[in-house]
Length: 474
Image 1: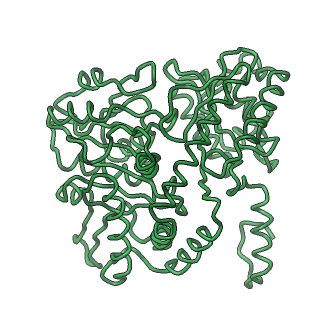
Image 2: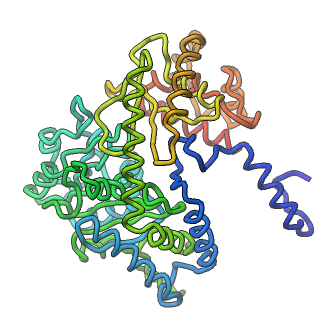
Image 3: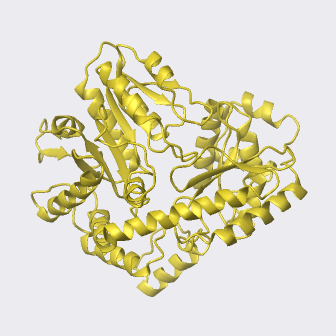
């Protein structure tokens, strides 16, 4: 029977679970620290097991109507209150992740600040693409500002970018690509002086920076206690170690939070009032996040944050000993970006070599003079000795293999390609012609794909990525 057809009669549970296990066999591991992006591991199995149990307990509770399920109100109040207590106060909303938190912050800023014409959002070049997504969905115009040599947002360039149509200015704490902090107080102050709201994207850093400060580390001001900061996003499924998806968006005042809400009574059905983008959604992530926060407690988070930062510092020191590699910027959180200045040592080939050794190093394309690099999100469970050994071995193998051999004329052909003339099968065949087989299962060798994308402009990259995703799922 084709896999996309339902069986006439239900299949046994054991058979279905066995098939799930078979399908999962090709996935990257979510425990152990060998995947340096996407997943966060405390190394405390009891905490992860508790979160799974709490998730299951709340699985069928629907967050659509808090009057029908008062448990979701109680849990959200506790979670948002705990986050606000560590991040400068305010009131907030529990969301499915950083993208939804950012979407709500952008919506609130747009709706609270009417302008003539299309509203604008001012972003540093290192701001997360979620802001672009929010702007795309909500009808805002993105205004980019450059970053300095340390990859930090430039306050002077930000000030120069403000116009009467600006409704929101963004700073990152830290920016994801390199783990460096934007100058939040300066950016928030200039936004406030112009009567514009300022959002701090602390999705990745919001639940590690306070604990690093508690441990005695120098953490620059970044949260709602900073004058001029009007909203902040903090993901609990990152360094909060909760299962996906769990995030919080905080607002400095409750009137701004209300601008994030959506209500509709203009139809004959039930009245709709949503704090978030989604309507019906499981309370599983809410229960799991609540259980994780309370199981780890403040001391647990202090220990995890300090261990993760020490791991990052050991990685930074170790990279300096690997010929041809160096770290970009000065990370203030456990995020490290590694690049190569040696033309014979291609970071995309390093990533493929690492994958063949059981490690995932996240590739990042070049952008506005920032070289291509590999991103590492570290936790305390990461075996930095094994990671450095894998990185060194992969670099040696990549040097021996050399950069990807991009077929002559391929870049020009792709740049001129009419993608709308190709269906998914045709595009998959095009990828297969350069050695990328989407139907083979297992690991994809991505160095060729990344090498090609790296020399194309962002708009062309985006068009090709959309076709890649479409062909992958076809």
